Length: 229
Image 1 (cartoon, one colour):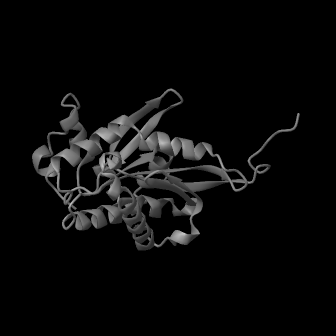
Image 2 (spheres, one colour):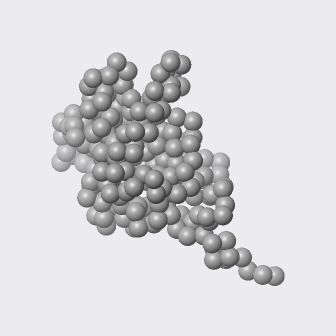
Image 3 (tube, helix red, strand yellow):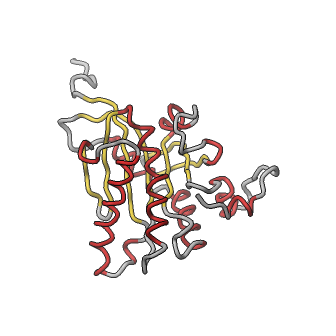
């Protein structure tokens, strides 16, 4: 029996990112296309801000109101920093917009074959983006900040990205101390992940959602929750 290896399938590790508009299904029909177009523009500007050429993304896939893209694995740190710029652009936009717009971002890394259209790495990315605890944290700030000028985007990163890039202080714009660990469990996926809310303390946000979760007493939970980027 022949051993099937990643080389046989021409698979290489890629850094992958997914972006989704929060609550777009509740928007009126006349806003759907403009929101999608505007989000694509802001995401493209965020890629450029971290030094990635939007046109060089691989395995591009549209996901309704969002998208998934892949870059070479060495770009994973830059993909993590996309959320910082996207959050800033969305908050700035929301100050002058009739309807606020926010985004969820997920970052992962894994093997992808150039000659394949269906990838396990993208499946994992989707599971992360849909993690209930992450969505609860994003929803909490959407309710707390109805105008969208304090919170524009939140991010979830996989365990592999956390261990290899974020935790060793490999991403200047994603300080590990401001991230929070969560568990992601679905019928076909179970792993740890970390969430980051630019300018906010993710641990304090989770504590607001679940008071049973302990928060270090050295921190002032109220003041940290009110901090903006």
